[in-house]
Length: 336
Image (cartoon, rainbow, N blue to C red):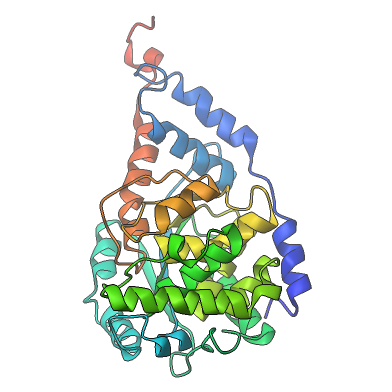
């Protein structure tokens, strides 16, 4: 296990490698020679530079793209916060294994590997209205699983999750990190009715009150209020930074899981791009709080890494234009 204590993990979060600005600058220089008006490909140009910066290569590559879906169960579902029972998490993991979920189709369509990692699904986390979701050892174990999953030879990682009830801990973590109370961050998740939405808000407020002493520390807040799959996403995001792998973040739960890194380091999420903005109520505000601008806005709220994976083809297109276009000189096209 890479992390034996919260202090060790905190040190790892505060000692992050910077991006390779020389590689990013090389991309920008090449972009200015290609057969197009400068800047006319918009974010496709900055995506190519982002890849170069965090891969550390003048010419980025996307030979190995991997989607991680971390799965966990939540004790707070006892408070009636989800439209589905917890056993659906296990059933959906089986569906992933059988190739029947949306993420299976999207990964295939984008040429991405898919790795589904269940985290102790037979044992839910603690109900954070009554206790911590995870004690320090359980939190560090889940973070370490995510950290160990990311290999240095990957060119791009998409992060996603599966966990019935997990928009509740995501909203709780968002409120803990950025304030505003439960109602600001709480949405309908899998589709709860008005009564279910009220139960979610009440549960989150109860958790925030119970664990108030922990909320000033992003790691303690994530342990007290989060879930194993959220902790694993946090670990994977951290590992990707340490191993020079750029990251596409999925929706609300995934963004909330990674958010403590931004609280621990001012550029903690600089190696990430928000693939999309979810229809889940708190996601747009969370992206704004983190200064992340999403690539897509398609009204999606599935999870599973689906939005992140869908954005892979945008990244591939950015690289194809950067690598494949001719320069003005090569094409014999007059510059202004």
